[in-house]
Length: 153
Image (tube, rainbow, N blue to C red):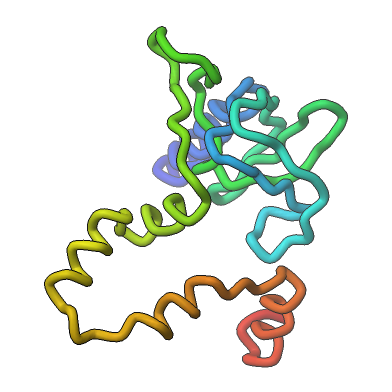
């Protein structure tokens, strides 16, 4: 019984640590959703460096408010550091990169790594891989796909 009470107190303390804190957005374009899920409808956006107030947290998601907008964003998109869009200082800085490089970095590749791999494997045809990388799926299409596959209700 005492263990459950202690666990509950720790969970509340962890939630309280995020709640009512001012945080910075550390992603290029943060999507605010109507619920704590990547499948929630997008109700607004926040930009890199925007300051937001965390109202509450739930399973890795933060309900935030900023400039009259309120919505849920994944905690990985936030940082307690003040993000500054200028060089110098100890705060986070922005390095100019394109969306293609950001996507490759998220997959563990950089332009240089991909180029080197292609040099080492000159007979491989990357036409379809490159085509797949250019494809986009809307949130509505993703939700419909998950519903048809009976992965969500």
